[in-house]
Length: 418
Image (cartoon, rainbow, N blue to C red; front, side, top):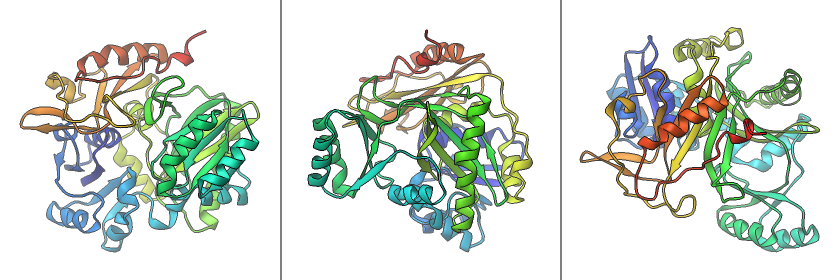
């Protein structure tokens, strides 16, 4: 089978690498891809968010299956366009996108199906938000966009000025959501869905700030698996996952693809904070290297609606994903910085025991590796436990160097300190 993966980020590189390990494919393409994917696939210079260009690329390259794990092509209707023309796809169709694209809708969805979420309010302008915050001085809130843009970036603070300044950056693009702060362990659950059930990938936990108390980002690190107690996992399934899948079915939003659920495990139990109808970054980079089951076997089961019958083969090891970012990220990342030469063997992610390198905002220009965005490379350490994986990730990051590069020094620490 010939596969096309749409995207150019580190999570798309991770997915493409997963496909490259399959014994069941005879062609792998990525559009537009990056310097990492060109080592394992054929990069196509098309706009992945253009349904017409993607379809034409499928015809020209005899592509059988298009995998969309990133957001932009989903929201331009690529899935529906390809399906209508007989090309199999992985991804959420338009009828399901409002679960992520409209957070207020997702909250009314969770209310209808009795799924626990934080208390929240939606604001369209500054004045009512300001009045509300002044009535609740000293309380801690989370401010986030009500739409998919700017993705998972959000601010968690009790400072009035910081909350209002962040709201200023969001309101020009639409309404925003103000939620109560929840204390607890953040966890990311990645579910693969078919018409009869689901397959849960190993749970992860993401680090979303630029540093402890720092600015919100798209994600600076992730660990996998998160050690969830059996009763906690049972509660997540019973109070969040099963009601969600039932709601999708009865409201005619069910689909075959991925659903990522962000939760906080509080003292009162697990509480859902967001749905994503795609893979999360950098959670995907932490999860993929641990999975031993052939991705094509998983997709075949999805097509046959037998996902729930699969026993997922997963490594007994742990992973720590560490994001190397550009100077100025997340506000104004500097681009065009040249990376020091990276050993060719490491680019292939082919050596057992070595860290994985998944590339995001990096491209090859006339033989030089240049940064093109804020989050440039995800280094994934694998080890017998989180501590060991942490050590391997930080050992591996020494091979990623460019002017102004930086990364958090504490990814995974909270899981083995004390």
